[in-house]
Length: 118
Image 1 (cartoon, rainbow, N blue to C red):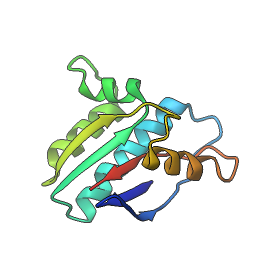
Image 2 (image 1 turned 45 degrees about the vertical axis):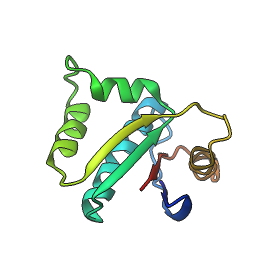
Image 3 (image 1 turned 90 degrees about the vertical axis):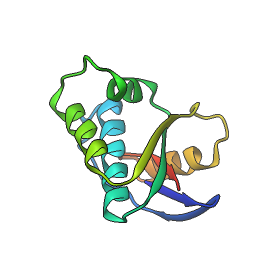
Image 4 (image 1 turned 90 degrees about the horizontal axis):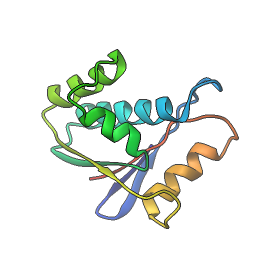
């Protein structure tokens, strides 16, 4: 996770996931962690930005009923933060996304990634 505030990197953290974890699940875990971070830090307004269109579409879908996705939807509704989910093109030079990718790949292990612009 990489957090930016006013265009500057504020902090980052990583979480090691099981090597069998799919990229889709890793992205979903990252989004869930981002929502939890906003709630924990009592951030009033946040943009969570992901390069996983499939993850964002799944969260937005009214028909989606997988438990872990419903959990993310509930967390989004349960926070006092205004959280916007945005898509960015991967490997297109977006500073936040490039930093998130760097930390996700740094150890050569599967890690979750996202970046959040406050």
